[in-house]
Image 1 (tube, rainbow, N blue to C red):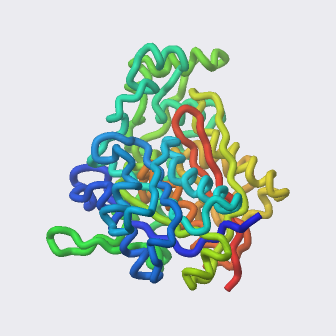
Image 2: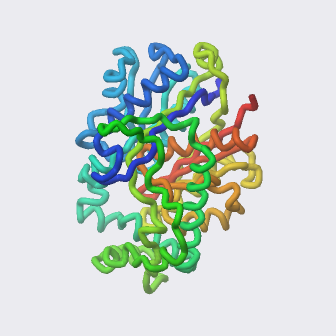
Length: 402
């Protein structure tokens, strides 16, 4: 069986997912095109050698509809012969794009490929695809779909986390992200983008270095009103042993929405030789899991546990865990259950601090995991994301020493 080798990784900085964000003026396809051209410029890649491009995107409508992967290939000048496919596994779309691509390389279907993700929340808002999962009342009642914030508060209630603990995790991840940016941890992966005013955007703009427990303590619960409007009733119907849901997450302990794109160049040994690039890591395995669509957000952790077991490893063998911060409660659960302390879990901060760009997040986490393994000369890393409706995907990586 062939090996799936990570050859390079690039991403945009993450912009605020609002009309005030720095990337709001760029369509999702434009973000992909800029990364594709940057990949060619920095590696000397001949696009004609690429067998397929797989892009994760969670809200595939409007400017993100009609297969943005194929559209971007054509606009980037990669030629008519390079295929493209866009996949949707909700927030886990980007990591799934990487996992599926690696599996196809290991199986011999592809020799050289690009995998990644894109999301422009500011231009294509969440739920604007009007899918039945959240927008059809009959479907919502039948399957018990709830908003992710309600699921986060449900998990916090089930695990007994206190508001202070959730806020403390948020402070920690903001502090990590600010420190990582200060020491230039992301310099190798960021593709600078010139803005219309002539300035250059090259820094995640959601990080708040001064985030404090005192400041977060003043924030009201973010999802109590939504719960009172009927969402709590749906969740409690599925978990009848509870008599209430404690609404503890605030905007400060929740992932901020962001605009971003990310790409990884992945190949087998022959593909790597053809590019002349030194393989940086191998993708050993991936795992896809699902769980109760109401509790929802535990699926990413289940996928981590599954992919580690698949490789015959234990959590103690993993040097870096990049786990999408789908609210503080799930990160505290992950840390407790897997024994992953602050030095191994999101060591450079996560999506609460730097933003969650749905379809792009998983690809950013895989690439970030490779970067961090190289910095600390670790061996194994895992990147994972929990998605809507109880879906989760994890990818296991092994660094290749220089």
